[in-house]
Length: 378
Ligand SMILES: *Cc1c(COP(=O)(O)O)cnc(C)c1O
Image: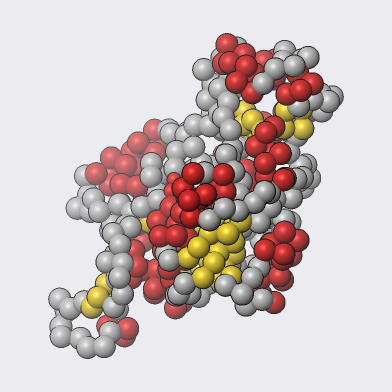
């Protein structure tokens, strides 16, 4: 079965991890520091903090803003972590509907959702397609809100108005995930980028027990062994084993993005004539590191439901998945506070299906997916 997404690991990656394993550093060490510098340079940000996963990355980013109690707004079409991490950081998640074309947080819906308790907005670059960050930042800045980008899908993408995602040109911080299904991997892992030295210092402390080791930031300094706990932190560190894999993967990221874009172009051409299949927006010359190939299917026109379609595709060796169950409909969220309806998010959930897209797909596998999808015809 061709899965909807999968990591690409080669001999260079294996050698990098083995070298780290044989080094004196298994936990956070010099390879983490090098990886952070490489990510910062790649995205064009001043600082990068590598973390154990993007869920903790989001939590640390929200906490570093020191917003106290209040609300954070995000999209209902995201992985639950975008919202749960707010709650872990003492904020209440609030949702605003998506733009049905892009499946990203709609600036107008954000504007309407902002209330007296709103402190933060966390836009999600769904499938790797950047949000309209210029519009979101205009709205958020005018209302005094902080901005954390959930870029778990979007490393390697460029904004429509130029600049790489992660450069934080429209935000306070950007969070990446390196889970194996994402565009590049460290096993588990994530990273936060920012241009603000104060946020960077807070993130470094929050990542490791709230401990500060920089003498210039201490109240007192008893000697070379000394450190201070200045806040309540976590152990959210990345290991040198993960960072070794990350540095090796990062060297291949541009190639991954190119291959993902080529597969998207092949799908676009192959499915353009299907009235019952809605394609993602065509980003044209804008560099989009497509993480997911998520389409809309008209199940009524097809005459069968999603379960039947997924079974048919699986019968042809093609895996598929649903991204996402709208977060505001989850039992945990409803227990906190009933929100919605969000008609565009709910309509997306009724129709969406993610089909295989990953750099290691062969041309024959791409053709296999195309044939299986075209064979679904009503
Ligand atoms: C994967 C994902 C996360 C969480 O990433 P982890 O590294 O698995 O913790 C957060 N947000 C979105 C949109 C994701 O896809």
